[in-house]
Length: 415
Image (cartoon, rainbow, N blue to C red):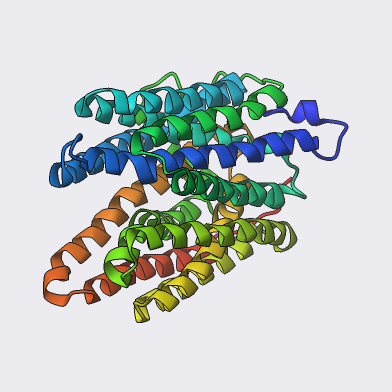
């Protein structure tokens, strides 16, 4: 028995307080993600007090690539740490603290030191996600896994709305966001550590006694022992390429391609996040009813439709319509593919394999961003707005490749 299953014996599902505290963590970490990663750090580095616009953008991309890239390489080994100890929560706590503490200090140090602190904080945030995803077995059963996962994902977008509203209506300066967002993350994440209980089961053979890169390569070599897992991860690489790239470029696309002002874009994007909340709840239920693979297929179909709408007509109304469709799918994506990953993975190595799951998503984030950026950058001067349409077509292409690969993934029922 692992991951608290022994503690859950004798009851059909986890206590509601466990589910509430687990899903609240998803809301909490999204506050950090939107406030620090998507909003504050870019404005900080490109400001006059930072490096200025040109150098600041370069430093931002270097910091993200360094922190995400290093985390991607180490993800399976990081996940194996909790497999070996038989506990997820201590590691989740440590990496959560690593995301919070350096973030608060960023605006109070010189810019170069701020970049280093951001790299440390983003590494901690990305590492915490591995242990959070693997801890879903603590708070759910095979019968309600999709609902719980979708609920967490949907509430995550409530976190986006919450911190977005605080920034907008509180008129927060950038340096204040660096303080408020991490402190809210700390406050709202406390219940998961105070309420959840684990029964540790030590697995000494977990791959943490060797070099992290060798551990990652060993994990990749062993994928063929688990039918469908390699194909699923390859499919995930392609469809999360579109997901991760859209998250990064949506605000810029709304302003520079569609023609919204910066203030209008903020209002629209925060409003569209509400569709992701609804999507998380609806598609979470659907995951339990028809299975994670079929639900994921529906999610990706919605994404493809939304990208096609945005590509064919660059104007405010089509952009909002595409945003509603894509936002609804956003809410169901993690809920369904997180559960499908669990079904395909060995129960005693969830941390290790969720680390590989994280590596795939982060690798696609780097490559997808470069492909979209090069496409728009090379074509913008000769083609104007059409360059953005071609950029979206590259995302639609990778989405369709991911959907094709997903078709061949088996979906066995969870024991």
